[in-house]
Structure formats: C-alpha cells, structure tokens
Image (cartoon, rainbow, N blue to C red):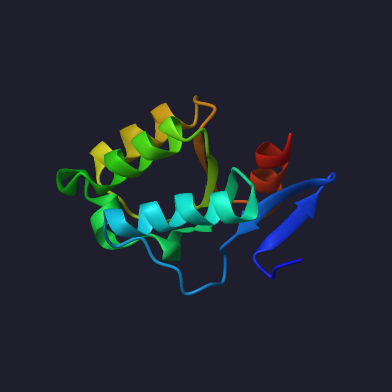
Amino acid sequence: MDDRLRSRNNVQFIDLVGSDFNIKREGEVLDLMGMCYSYQCNLILLDHVNLSDDFFDLRTGLAGSAMQKFANYQVRVAVLLPTNAHHNDRFKELMYEMNGSNMIRFYDDRDQAEHWLTS
C-alpha cells in the first residue's frame, strides 16, 4: 500500500497530512484529481498547511475552483483546520456552508475528520 493511502473501517482514503503537498493554484487541484484516479480513491484528508494563503482568500477564486472540482469528480475532502485559525469572515461563511455539505468539511479533530470521511 502506498504511504499516502490510509484505511479506517476498511475504507481507504488519501492522507496528505504531514506531506509537502500544497494547493497554490488550480494545477494542484488537478493533481489531486489525478491522485484519486491513480489510487482509485475519492476520499482525501488535508491539513490546513496543505492550503496556500490564496486558498483562504476567496477573491482569488482558488477555493471555489477546488470545491467545484471536488463536486464534479465526486471527491469528498476533510480539512484539518485549528479552531484558533484566523480567517476572514467570508471564508468563515464558506466553511459554515461547506460543513453542511457532503463534499467538503472542516474539522479541528483528526479522528472526527476521518470518521466523517470514511462513514
């Protein structure tokens, strides 16, 4: 098994926490889609450090583009984001909306993120 693949409850997911993978532009989002295809897995666990400052700045369109690709390709993504992370109000609103969706959610606890991802 590849070191990026993890399993919980017999469900595999791509774990990029602790990796140097970073979404700085749309090309990295496409790289994620390629990873999903090559691993035959549509579940991804990311850490906030895998996301560039541009991702958190909604004016760049990077977060919207990424989320649209996740939805189009039916990829579920859990993002570990500390509760004390400071982001602008627009990004907080987006997080609130996304946490009600079934495609991407933000968690401050890895166990909860993995549980949602694999359930």
